[in-house]
Image 1 (tube, one colour):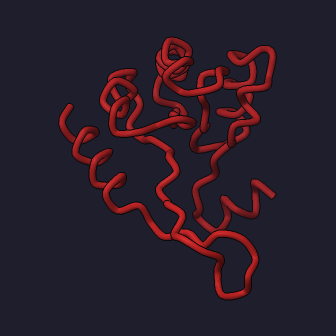
Image 2 (cartoon, helix red, strand yellow):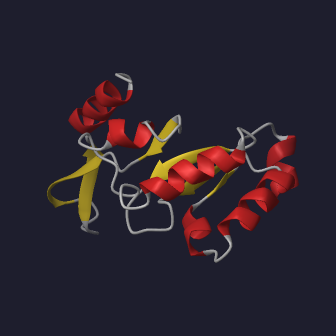
Length: 127
């Protein structure tokens, strides 16, 4: 599957399964060798802020061979702190629930949370 995606000139992210791997340094090198473009991680902790030291370590040992993307619990209050680890991308939920059910009566309907997006971008761009 990785070969197919790469043949289409698309980027490939190894999602947070990385956080459950025991030997993350070995896995990081394997993902580089396999051709992944980035790893989405919370640093092996519940939130990226809790795993911030690990994220910084991953950035250092990756030597720019793979992009490290911080995710889980990213918000305007911690975006700048996370960006100071050396990452250049953040992954965050940018939606909010609107009142009531959707038109098919199948749960809440969500819309983009424009204010959260603007707040994170303003913090992230300030470094």
